[in-house]
Image 1 (cartoon, rainbow, N blue to C red):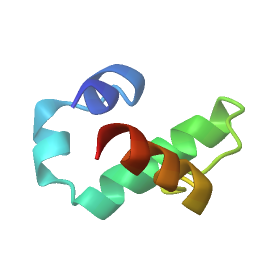
Image 2: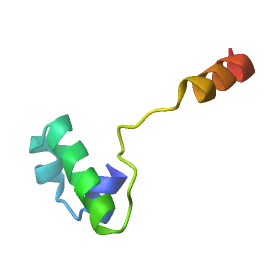
Image 3: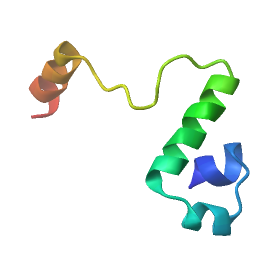
Image 4: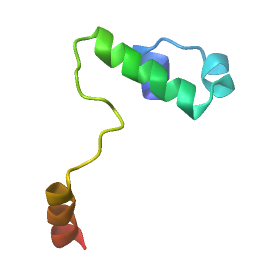
Length: 57
């Protein structure tokens, strides 16, 4: 919600009426407009995941 109300400047009504897909697309678009290049849905690599599992179980 912080991203919706802060960065996107959405009203609570807009936030609660949006779907998760709409929200994620809006965040991706905002990040791209601000010069971000990595998609929000990119997860850790297999090596990074293995390291996290080894560290935290």
